[in-house]
Image 1 (cartoon, rainbow, N blue to C red):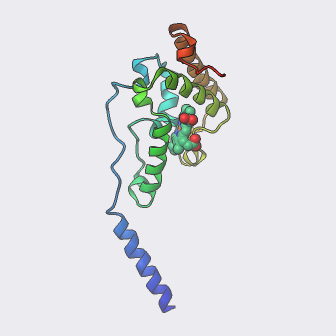
Image 2: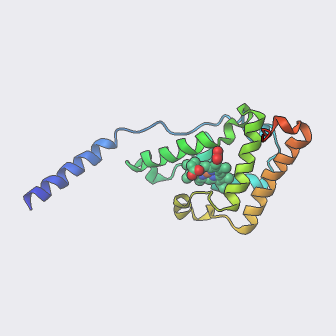
Image 3: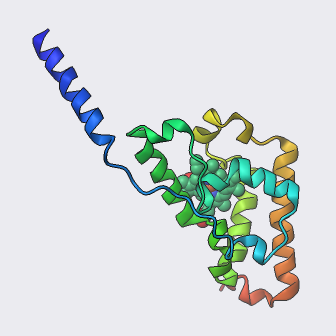
Length: 163
Ligand code: HEC
């Protein structure tokens, strides 16, 4: 029993200690490179992105209270960093045309296949679980961005030719 208590005490001390080590928060109000500076984002689509995607795919996360408790902070930080490295709506205007186009293809695919938003996210954020209508609205928008691009740029600047 004594060893048990000792382990418990060590765990408790470790838990308290890690509370002081935290990554910088993902917060920014800079929208100057946001996707909407290039392509129209209708209000209904913006609502969907805000509640279901932006926490991991922009430079601004709305943190729940428990995000301040370690090791949750690290776990969330990991998702946010990885999500942003794949797709960041706040950096969209810095992407090459090819990348912009391809990321919209990915949005259509990921949303259709219900890969996004991540399950671990919708368990907690129940309202981020998309309805069929919301999925259609989001994929139709992503497709319309691709169509706009196709109307403005030659296709080989958007898609690498398959040899
Ligand atoms: C909890 C964080 C989180 C949320 C919320 C989230 N994503 Fe993601 N997303 C990720 C992570 C992490 C990856 C990279 C790993 C993977 O594909 O699973 C990713 C990958 C993607 C990719 C693939 C990009 C590529 O280069 O292949 C797309 C597209 C995407 N997400 C779109 C969305 C959309 C649209 C939403 C909202 C409907 C959303 N995500 C919500 C974390 C998230």
